[in-house]
Length: 499
Ligand code: TRP
Ligand code: ZN
Image (cartoon, rainbow, N blue to C red):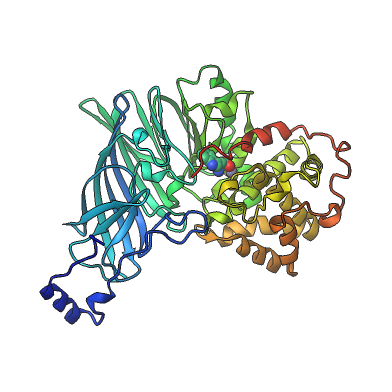
């Protein structure tokens, strides 16, 4: 307890006089928000409203230097509070005054301000730091990927601690200004719009702005040499796409896929309602990954996502997350179905629209693919466990549950739900239980038992459970045309990196 606040007598007395609470009521903020799977994620005692990140990255040496300014509001009387961060810090100031700090746990930074912080006040926290993020390992792992010409950070559920101090949990969303200086001829990409760009003494600084609530893991940075295309959609939304100049044989397929971004966004708006953010786009850095991530306004696509040619399905998946996952975020990581079930189902709907297999055919196929004794059915999409958070079943059984819902309540109610959920929960957080209640209300019947069968039972639902027959016989169901692309977009993410 070396860092317990020691208030000198006189200061303690004046605090007693100034506020009715005694100094003893000022307690440390919790080191986590209480997430079921990741108890150390996020922190208690304050709420961040804005991150201003002013960074400089040298690709040659992997040196990242930064000053982060966090604007927050305290939610309790605080003697000290934690930030989540793994890089080396040189100075922290709270409300302009130097604070003491110490590290603990896997990525905790304990900050003790010069004077305790009263509940309900706005505070500023300035953190100066410098480190080589790809060399900083937690459990032998770094989320910062070096590329031949730069670096990329795009990971789930943990990414932020490798590049900025934060309250690292989706329940504390904030707006962002991300300003990054990189050597001339190199670009820095982040979320939102490029507010400005300037060059001086061999360094070019890019100022990005994302002005709607954004979760820490959805905040991304890519440094490298990119071909950047900018455009606006028919509705006037800025589109910024970027493809590494270094993709080799995948360049064409990568470009051709993310070139469909505006079109896919327009179609998704017809299903989910108005697009929630200030820009859209995507980027493909030279990272040898096959997965993609729904980083806000600008999904990340690993270059291997395009090994087998164009994949528009993965673009639809990541853009669907802008509504399901990004605008409406999960409350707890156990609620991952709120993100992945819907993003996966959007691929089924796209397939249906494109005439490459209806959602029902895809549901029949998934059901038939997995006999009752397949371990696939042991994973509960409604609470899969940290080890299975991105298991194929979260996606496939997760989407199957939505097709079952569609069959149960009918198209009119179902599509009404798909559109009203992101509208009514915009920029907020929600749980699986919240969705079950919401769908029940919209359909006029309790769906608790129904969702228990489809999301929570560790067994294959009876074939008739969806109100119609699902994939009667294993061999009788043909593979829909879209299946390979759908599966390529989402399968095998599980195990990309363990916690
Ligand atoms: N959310 C991503 C998607 O479905 C998948 C994902 C899970 C991921 N864990 C990851 C991507 C780690 C990158 C890194 O689109
Ligand atoms: Zn997804």
